[in-house]
Every structure is written in C-alpha cells, then in structure tokens.
Length: 280
Image (tube, rainbow, N blue to C red; front, side, top):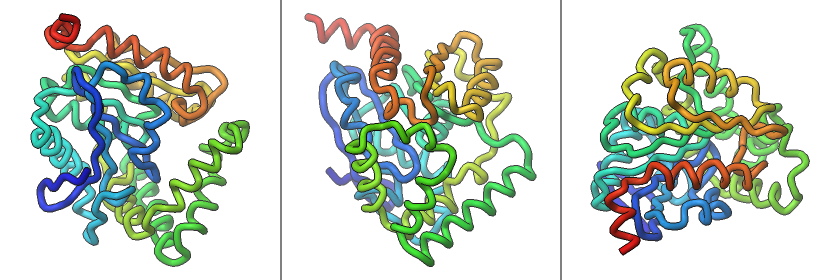
C-alpha cells in the first residue's frame, strides 16, 4: 500500500498480528528482500517499507530529502500513521544504520533492535570525505550510464564475493530487483543517505542500555565484524552472532542461521503484555 507522510509517499507492506516489527532493507534493496524471511517474523505485526529512491516509494529530486534526520522523521511518522507506538527495528546494512539512529532518537519507542552488518558511522572526518566522494562517483555513474552498468559494477565489488556460491536462482532474483531500481533514486540516496553523510554515533550507544540489541555479522566481512566489536564495547549486554563462512548479507547467504538467531531473540524480548493477550 501507499502511505503519505511529510510530503512524500512510501510503499509499505503490513501483515500479521502481534508486537510490531519494522524491517529496513539495504541499499539497492526493496521490501521484497524480506519475503523469503517472513517465517522468522511469524506471530508479529510486520511492517516492511521501501526507502525513498527505492522500489515503489517516491524518489525526490533533492538529495537532502533523503538525509538521515529526514529518514528517521519519516519512519516515526509512518509508525504513527499505522497506530504503532513501539516496534522492534530490524535493519540490514544501510537499513541497519537507519535502525540504529531510529533507536537512538527515541529509545523508548524501540522494544528491540536487530543490526545486521550495520555501522555506527565512519569515525574519521577524512574517511567520511573520501566516502562522500566515492558515493558521488557512483551517483554520476548511475546518471551517466544507467542502472545496468551500475549493477554490473556494484555486483563486482569485493563486498559481495562470498555470494558467488549462492544458487543461480537467488543471485538472478537479487540482480533483477536491482535492475528495476530508478537511477536517479539510487543516486540521490547515495548523496543524501550515504555513510559519509552520517555523523558517527560512537560514544552514544549507552543510551540503548535498556533496549535489547542483537548484532549479526558474517565472519568473512572483516570491516563489519570490527564495527560489531566497536558497538559491543559500548553495549556489553548486547548479543552478537558472527556467522562462519558468510559475508555481508547474512540473511541471504545463511538464512537458517539468520532465522535461528533472530526469531528466538524477538520472542524472548517481545512485550509480554501483548504476547499474553495473544495466548488467551
């Protein structure tokens, strides 16, 4: 369905009953990325959303409309429009960055947090500038050569090397979803919501001390394993699952491991009053 908030329209899918869970996809993804994993969220009210510039959601021309503060405000407005005061927030990669900022903005609205291959931000200013420049190059590639050339380049990155052993049908479906994206939407997402644009949140994570946190990484994804360790230094009570033999996209490369980590975690921490009502 379509939901209009704060002057833009999002594509949203809502299904199931129970405590709310908000699912946030990664860059070049859509809410369809979660479809093979919906069984992990059985017994919950699942809200899936396409980020701006992705899938069926609007793709504004102003990159600033994609900025993290705008994105967080939009997501709270979406939850409000659905009558959801609290939700568990589950995010992957870019969606994990957004999930972390969402929880930090208003921790009391987040009953649990699942961060898959997520970053607390780039600490060094010079590195952030390099990332902004790299994202601008990608944005110009999208605008100059189109989505097919961009996807060819994107899929050649070392970040995805561990996916070479995935079944051909899985890799083909992933590529087809990427090819359906709009070049200007992805370009402006890079310019507005790219990792270099985010102020790092290191030193702030203690604000989540009362929010149950699950961190998921693939053991082959050294950069994000390091991010996980950094977050754990501030969140010693968080649970970390580091899945052997897989890379950045744990949910795609090891769906059973993802299911075995996420479902029990959410069941353990779901608001007890809501679960009790379900069991009557």
